[in-house]
Amino acid sequence: MRIAALKETASGENRVALTPETAKKFIALGATVAVERGAGAGAAISDEAFREAGAEVGSAASVLAEADIVLGVQAPDPTALTAAKDGAWVAATFDPFRNRAQIDAYADAGLEALAMEFMPRITRAQSMDVLSSQSNLAGYKAVLTAANEYGRAFPMMMTAAGTVQAARVFIMGVGVAGLQAIATAKRLGAQVSATDVRSATKEQIQSLGAKPVFVEEVAGIEGEGSGGYATEMSEEYRKAQADLVSAHIAKQDIVVTTALIPGRPAPKLISDAQIATMKPGSVVFDLAVAQGGNVEGSQPDETVLRHGVKIVGYSNTAGHLAADASALFARNLYNFLSAFWDKDEGKPVLDEEIGNAVRLTQGGKVVNERLIPQAA
Image (tube, rainbow, N blue to C red):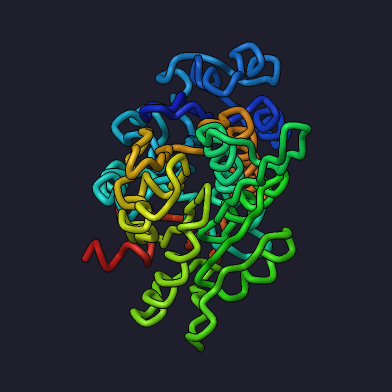
């Protein structure tokens, strides 16, 4: 069993899907591990560190030669994987709904694409969930970036020259990223409030010491979709929420938006008109900017100034913490493959529940039920 990890080719991608720690663990399972030269440079991992862990280090072609499994952060172009074995597994993130042509190309190439972002949100798969591990870091980085852009202090400071008031921070969307954003803003000393369309998150917000901001007068809308994700709301709820949020945003110094709906463009949460009500010098960080953005006017990797308010968003927020992001991503991949490792077979053998959830292509066809209607 040969496991290969390549250097990421996507613009601005500094993460790597294998670390010396996980290389050692794969080797302990009996696998041969190979990594492309320079693959870890963006995450401060040297080629020598991989060699010391027991991995082969070489060119992409030599690493891929007869590879059974290819690991990636973002799925490589299938045309670059011709040296791998027929039917080789590629475990990475694929963004399948937006990159359908690439999925079809994987099928045509006879590769078995395993989309890590399709990992089911069940208890036994928590340690394999790359979306959670990367979102955790993204929520943290979003608040630090906003604090850096904000021209004032976060905590209340009582000095001989007078009192500095604490910054007001509002988190919109209380998933993994949002919860970490709340915790980080609280640690920095801000007054923190948060909202979500899922009523069950109210207790989570309160448990972190933040103030929940929720629509109360519209009953019977829980906002909880399958797998713990939010769903789109009714028009009645959206209007009530927009009115509530508009009044709240006008009083905030920093807003962080984190809302995503799988397979769809990011929902618009903040309009230009709402931005215009904020104080000059305020900051909005749009964590969903790469998926179309929650904030009107946000642009990936740019600081946009509108009505005196800075709007910031990274196309790859977790990638700005490449060392930790790589360590967590690599552990997710190891936890995934090792959980199904068959000692007799000398390779992982996936079960139906998780295997069918993450497998996109097999035997030259697109096989994932979430994509088959689009393939018809």
